[in-house]
Length: 140
Image (cartoon, rainbow, N blue to C red; front, side, top):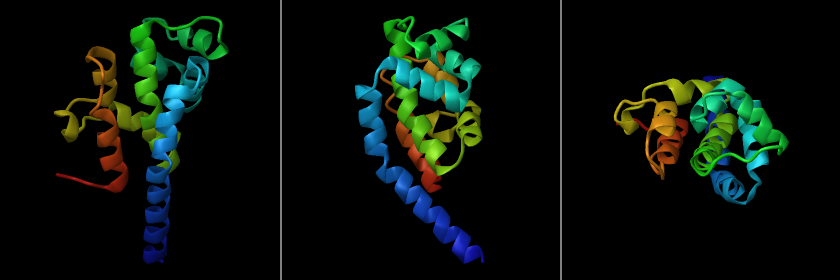
């Protein structure tokens, strides 16, 4: 039975990695309201607000509805979080994706990905490889 579960998990992880290219394309091509809505749905409004660097999480709802457009840096953060979130949600669940963003990560110098998005400097290239390693179970 354990072997069957392991095989299913391996297939799920492979599918998630295969779909990663599509997620990256969507992050660039989708409207920012679509990106914000997806992140809000899967991570919650407060977490999405934190990742984007805003003080008021209600701004996320404004972005998702298309009423307001985020500032450039907030949009960049949202678009950086999108493929990471889709990868983690597809491989595991929204709860695991949220937990991953707030857990320390040895591939990110023991910092939480959420902290790096909020306080770090773009382009945030290290986030996606760290998430991919998490999905694949790669450790140092």
